[in-house]
Image (cartoon, rainbow, N blue to C red; front, top):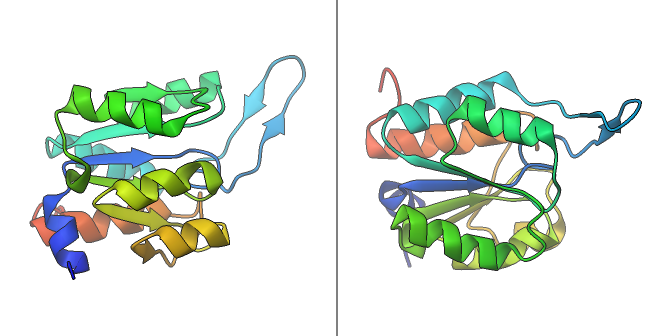
Length: 168
């Protein structure tokens, strides 16, 4: 059996879901076509450090929103795939483009659409408040909830194992 530390050491690409993973899962509509999402600043800081360390970041979500495109750009995501009704198909495209093998990928997801990815990646992680099916499939259930620092918690663990966490 592969240890969590061994899984962490191999990760070169982080694929993150948005609603329920990078956010608490709330979708707030304003007037017109305006959609609001709340992102945790510490998640963002950690993802920026991840990309500054030369690692890859992909945002993969089933919904589409200009807010997500903006956040992806801010974070330095090389791929922002929205409206993915089939996340496995998008996963294949991202891995091919990133030249990564499944065991070199960590996934942060929280619900049914993420379950297939959690089962084939090297390190599948779920926020503390993720759906039961995702929690059962993941290698790791985080202490933090979606939108509450789950991405930071995951990246801090991975980057410490790799010796690249700032101040490590």
